Length: 86
Length: 198
Image (tube, rainbow over all chains, first blue to last red; front, side, top):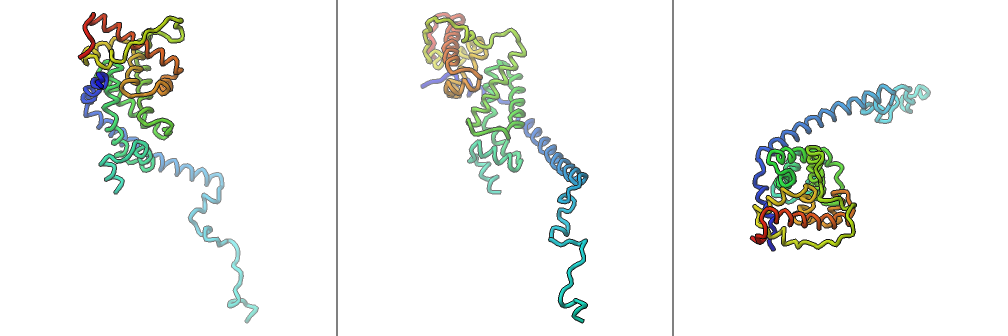
């Protein structure tokens, strides 16, 4: 079955200016760039805010506290080094 | 690496390309979508705006608009239906802003009386010689043009057209009949009683 509307559309599809793809691609590139910048600065800002408001989690992330050791308390004496044994 | 190779062979569905683009922000996935649809979007914009330069600018704006709202795409409808919905509404908005008093549709279906409509056969549009069809389409209201394109090019159902244009299904059915009647009227004005067939 013929469809003149589809034929007309196919004719016009061929008239798409090729330079349009470059414009879209460069726009995509700039979006990616700003996305990276936003990711960098927003995550940095969030961390800073968290530290300012005293979140221990943010302050100590990746530090020795993560190993479950409290460095502020004196370690429990072990049997080998206890002075009572001497 | 494998994903990029598969991508180049064009194996991904639209939804997969969108998901991959959103996951990794690899621009090649969006470029693939652009290549799939840019020609169609441009042709439809040309049909709606009747101007090559405006169609080019509109195509660019529509893809940038789509890029910004891609994360809100839900698979409720296909990507093409979503893209065309954005495109038709964008073009109708441009036409509204450009000519504020222009009638978008032949008549507001809400004001139609109980007059009996004689449906114009689809063959009036589908069999018309393309140069003549081009002239006729340029002379009918843009909303009618959009409805005819959605129905006969995009193969959208009445329900889908109603969703795109934010109208009821019965309003779209009525508008479709009126659009065909308008096309027939314009054809007779331009070409008299010449037969429609090519």
